[in-house]
Length: 269
Image 1 (cartoon, rainbow, N blue to C red):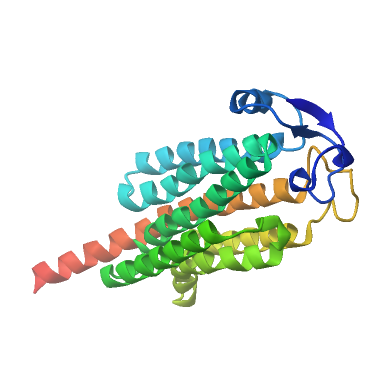
Image 2 (cartoon, helix red, strand yellow):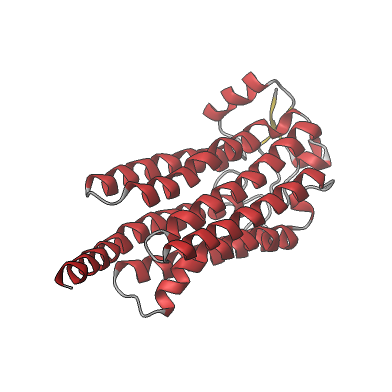
């Protein structure tokens, strides 16, 4: 594997707009895995996803320790865990060849939709009635199935039209954000509302930097290793995920209160 290449030393498919140095090219899967321990312009992209999964696991265990219902917690936790290997794989194995890069990019995007379906179920669990949870989940599964079919047939890279890709991914985001927005619209308060707003803002910022390529679009070469738009995107997604887990924790308290009230009313009648 070749390291420390400049943008003009790698083919078009291996370049990232605004990044002028720190490229890798060629090598085997084993070489790429070893590159996780070296500094290049995709190191942070891979490690932010690994760290995010570790944070998610620790927070999920804390919430479960507080005796929250494990069903929505595990669903939201799995949404991060199930996407992580494919995202890390894309950022790690992309330099091998154009075909490998395209294959892992498609897997990365496809599993965003798979994780979105899990989020749609987990975030709705404490907020919507059972039929609402079922409908929200089925809508998300249908969107994910359609998206995965479209991804398999796609012949262009996601980076060829970032706005189109962001809009495409936005379809599953709407499905899993619906329960959070519904909770706020129905007059919810406290921690869940703060989490819903945080998640929405984090995802909006992430989408903006992804589509515009800032800050490296303004200062090419200055953010080759740290601080690129993709680094920021991953941080924003991590913040949103933490907010989603805490939303489940916060709504679990309300959900438990409603169940207790219903039980008392049933016995009193």
